[in-house]
Image (cartoon, rainbow, N blue to C red; front, top):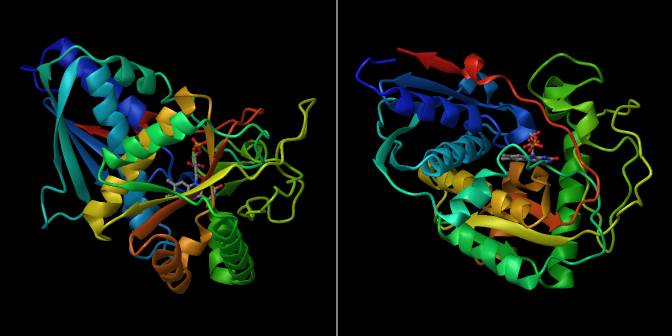
Length: 332
Ligand SMILES: Cc1cc2nc3c(=O)[nH]c(=O)nc-3n(C[C@H](O)[C@H](O)[C@H](O)COP(=O)(O)O)c2cc1C
């Protein structure tokens, strides 16, 4: 750490990187690394953690990194610094996604504090939701959160639309589970019970006996691969509602859009979490070019679908894991 940087700024920079790693990432690949030089944080994508089969272009890798970037920005704001971000600053170094530094001192707003409190609490849900619908005013606020990051949260209101999206998800899951390359890649990132690894999808983060959700069932990824993994049902009543189905979209579909989608995703998820709402993701169909194109044209009015999710109230809590920030941080 450069000696000209004050202790408070150095602490803020480290706290921001510690928060960054709590971002969601596809299969919990955590495909990022950070370098701190003086008061500047450089965020890089880690191509060794890209899904070569499911994500050849690195779209989901950049969405994941965008979510981490949002956590850095949010944390600096919560600590009273205006974040100064230069996104994708160098075309010659494509893995360098953004540089961020703490700028002028500003008092954090109420909403910043609210979202920041959710960074480590938010979890991906992988089951049905309680029958209680998500309140209208919260959904409207989620749409505004996505809009503030140059993305759209398209809620699928019609029953037919939800049926189509569920059918495409289930078809994609079936195709991928029969495809050896896809299945091996999921296997590489699923963790058996008791694993000491700090990345990948741990067995306790999905139910051992998944129930169908209604009125529409959205297939889950098969992380257990037929083995008796997953958390056991406890005394809680079983929730089986599909919840509100939504697609996060962007107008363009290049690296900048994927990074923006990730920031929008995390902003939406943290706001949802602050109001007690959880999200379940079903992105299988977006990994298959023809299905993604079909969804774009028929359900997203031509905008590019980046994430498919269900939103609702989850009664059970799931666990998650992360590599410590020291594993992903290089310092000058
Ligand atoms: C781009 C992207 C795609 C994802 N796709 C799925 C998915 O299809 N199914 C799923 O269960 N989770 C999906 N997830 C959630 C990740 O598995 C989850 O973020 C990761 O395991 C870390 O767990 P946590 O979100 O509970 O902290 C996705 C996350 C991202 C960022």
